Amino acid sequence: MVSEEVCLDRREGEIICPYCGSRKIVRDYERAEITCAVCGMVIADHLIDQGPEWRAFNEEQRARRARTGSPISILKPDKGLTTDIDWRNKDSSGRSLNLNRRIQALRFRLWQQRIRAKDSLERNLQQALNEIKRLGSNMNIPPSVQETAAMIYRRALEKGYIRGRSIDSMAAACLYIAVRIHGLPRSLDEIASESRANKKEIGRSYRLLVKTDIVKVPPITIENYIPTLIRRLHLPSEIGRKATEILKVATMAGLTSGKGPKGLAAAAVYLASVMLNCKKTQREIAQAAGVTEVTIRNRFKELMEKLEFVLKV
Image 1 (tube, rainbow, N blue to C red):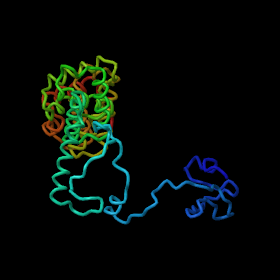
Image 2: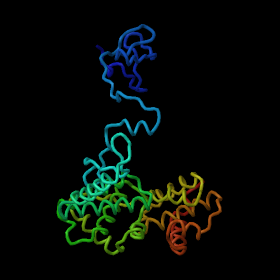
Image 3: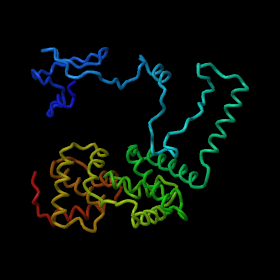
Image 4: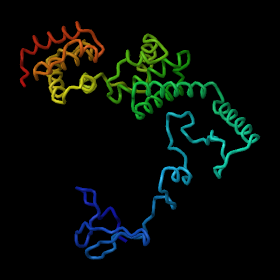
């Protein structure tokens, strides 16, 4: 038996024949072999089929025949390892339950929800994860970022940093840290506007988590705000590239230190739109960036004066 790893083309990731070098490979699933269609050499045998032994032709059959549950998710308090009682009131054959069985199933569901959170820590975690998922859904934050926030909250809960703090503020702070880690352009004001806690509480919880050894928060990158502004303003990609170039030159010149990232990004987009003859007013860009027109005007003047027109189209 020849291992498949020996027959992999490193450039393209294909299986090639080690004898004649052909890429015409035949996979025989009945014999569990991989053979070459040119010379007939058996490249690999005794293969293990990783798929199911059943077939499904639509989503209904696939859901009914599958014997595995949903994948493990850190966003669930039990990570999805427990079994849920179905809410459709049907048995294993798909037939509806009678009245007595429905009442019994309802009682089982009620007790299942009660015993999932056995102590205060589990109830705290369940409420926090629901808040993280709610914020992520309202702000269109990807599930991977939400899972990072859930992991941060779990670590803080194990270390005892949650005690004495609001659950909503700590959940929002963990989500803000996760956004910073993944480089998404979400400000603290945006998260506070969707959270049940105010900005002051979220900021206090954020500073508490930053001082611990749970996670290291990277600095804010101004360039991360550019794609969001370009998408909101429906501008071409050339303006985004020119605005990123402007910010890089401004960073090298030391013009970005101590300035708000959203204001600088908005001013760079406005300057790029002026250089590329794209008509966008300061008011439109200010509304998309969440800053005032005065901020854009001041940052724009600084960029025009300090850079001395070193940027060219």
